[in-house]
Figure 1 (cartoon, rainbow, N blue to C red):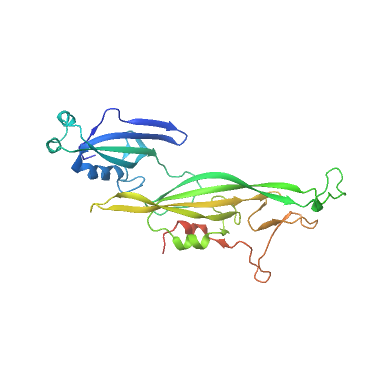
Figure 2 (cartoon, rainbow, N blue to C red):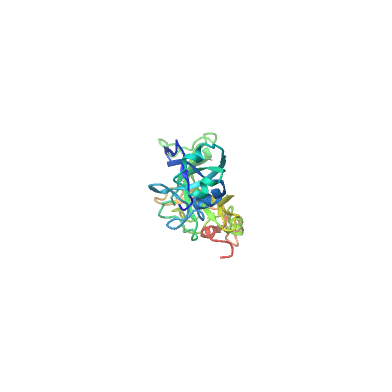
Length: 287
């Protein structure tokens, strides 16, 4: 970095955990140079393969993600900064800049959609479930298939639901209208590896994300968008087939699959859940 600084005693500090490596450094610079140093550390945002945030020494994927600046008033320190510039030593104010680094790499799932240039995606997955109560009148005993089960002998079916969380970092102009329109709809094609009709867009959360201090000394922001999808893919009686969000269990002897889709309108043929192109959720507004 071009700004003169000195690393303080006890720095750096590294930590290792399930999410990878994190580190913290304490740097000392002239108070008047603090913003220029922060700008060099944070760069122009999360940019991979380019001149973005400063990386932790010796680790290209561990990037500076936040800084904290404090006044440093130890007058004895300036007597020991002979390796820094004369201008720094002549100035009687110092800044302690704390830099936090985290492992920050793009998601590596091969079936993720593409994000606009300059932004990137991270991914995590959770689990949930639903329960479906099957009426006893529609069930039979294995040992006596000709004998219906009592009506109060209801069977409970547990249906796993996978929760996919896709976080879009450094989104400059998020597609607010597309997100609003797609909330509560299902995928019209394969998305995140899920067959059409099995992925429900549960909505999004949005937070402002600091990018950098500009050349005009102004803070610049983008958005961090988290998109939440719920995958419901019940395994039905036909091998290899799954039941999505528009399917309901239908216990009838003539229904070999055990599941069928419900129409909201017999004339139009519309299903209960409308379908959407989820790729539009990762395109900038107006594109």
